[in-house]
Amino acid sequence: MTIKKSIFILGLLELTIFGGLYVKRKLYDPKHSIDNARKEVKKLAVHDELKNGDLIFQTSLSGQSKAIQVATKSKYSHCGIIYKEGNKFYVFEAVQPVKRTPLDKWIARGQHGKYVIKRLTNADKVLTSEAIKKMKQVGDMFIVKNYDLTFEWSDGKIYCAELIWKIYQRATGIKIGKLEKLSDFDLTNEAVKKKMKERYGDKIPTEEIVISPASIFDSELLITVKSN
Image (cartoon, rainbow, N blue to C red; front, top):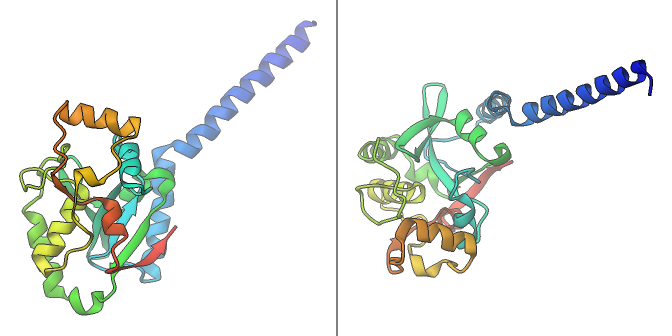
C-alpha cells in the first residue's frame, strides 16, 4: 500500500469517527434537547394548550423508571402539575427534592422529549383562581421535602404521583387515580425484584398504600389535551 493511499484511508477513518461522534452529540446533547423543548413550549403557549393545574406525564430516565413501568404496566413513570407564573410555565414535581422545574427543562429531561398533558374533564368549573391558589398553598407544604424512595403514604417524604394526588385531594376534594397496595403491582419481574431488594431488603411492605403515575394517567376524571 502506498503512503498516499494509507494517509487517505486514515483520514477517511478519522472523518467517519468524528462525524459519528458529532451526530451522537447532536442527538443527545442536553443543550440540543432543551432548545427543542423551548420551541415546543412556545407552540403550546401560542395555541393556548396549557392551563393551571394540568397534569403532565413522561418516561423518566431515572434508575428506577424501568421497574416502575414494568410493575405498573405503563410506559409513564413520572408526572407533575403544570402552573403558570406570568408568561412562564413550570412543573411542580417530586424529585430530589420537591421543587418547581421550568416546563422546557422538564420536557427535555424525559425520554426523547415525549410527554402527555391531561386535564380534569370539568377543569373550567373546578380549577378556579381560588382553587389554584389553594393547590399552590398545599404544594408549598412539600417544597424541598426529600423524594420518597420507599413510597410510604406519609408526608415526611413524597414521590411524584403522591404529590399530585394529595394536592388535588386536599385543595379540591378530588381523588385522581385509584389508591392501591404495593402487592397489587407486578413484583415478579427481575428488574422490579432487584429494585425492591435495594429499597426494602427482605421486608417488602406489601400492604403499603400507594398511588402510581399509571393510576392517575388512566383516571376517568381526566382527558388528554396534548400528546407528542
